[in-house]
Image (cartoon, rainbow, N blue to C red; front, side, top):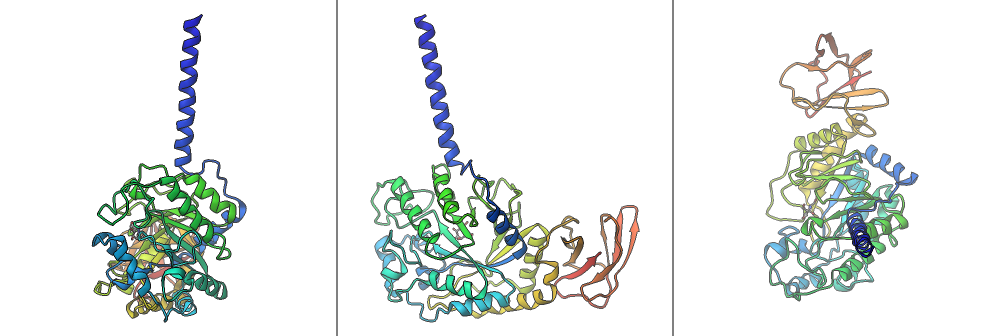
Length: 438
Ligand code: FHN
């Protein structure tokens, strides 16, 4: 009898341990109870229809003009790095001009770095004085100014927020980065750091009106650590149910996330996402216009307008948005090479946007020569690289007619293996010749 009782006790303890660890594991794996409410599902539709947004990497690192990783790359001690803040004075920052540039580019939203890995907040934070209001001569909350301008111009605003922090003493144990003698103590309270981070997330979800969402980054610095994601995700969804959460952790999305992003690659082909999982969530791919996210004065390796338009179109063909980055200068202006390319993309979208906005990828899978998008029963065949006057596509049911966007008739013929389309000489587009299939 005594033996049986002892055995039951052991079984019972084992079950308890299992449940506790499962909960901890569950907690870590996101918000398992999350059921996206109606307004969140509507926000997801809007996001997928919007297709094109501006990514902004801006902070005190722009003063050194050697991109946003300069603190870690050059092993700059915290006290040294903090001396940048008193030099940050973006007097030429004009949020309305930024918004006009965004709209003129054919973009519908902005995603800006509220805090990057260096830990400096470009917004007015009560939980820290390491921010633009308390530490810079500029002293104004640029996120507030931008949020108001976005409201005026009918643009949505998303906040990028780094979970990784090279400045905060409680970001401990250190992760894969920030491991140099930065002057931070070799001890710290991880839960205190998460409380601090959630404190700033709460401010971003409270002080800037209705936000588009939060774009997390940096969890990859401590991938095996418990980030208590459910706490953070519930905080956001409780305060702003429509807000879309995404996390650039380079893994399949966790419960509680509302969209999946890819970096420097099309869905499933992003060099960071080894799993290559493409979820059913709304998708977004982000890219730089030169080789860096933050301002880098010597980086002249700019992508061509053709490359950028092809990236936008291929992203759409893979059912994803395109989030194209600029790294503003410390005075708040955006360098001309970025502005010119955005303006050219806007020009093209004013003529061809019908085949991008509001579409979804397919039904013709990506091909050597291009991709397809579809909307309201109409299919758009995007011929990006014309190596031949004739292209072949798999069969599409009930084709009544094919034209270019300008109405020029397009000859096509049904074959055993599908349909061959003869590209008209006249009416071709230098970047993307679009065939409208009705
Ligand atoms: O380290 C960051 C980097 O600075 C930049 O923010 C990009 C943007 O997606 N994400 C990280 C690199 O994966």
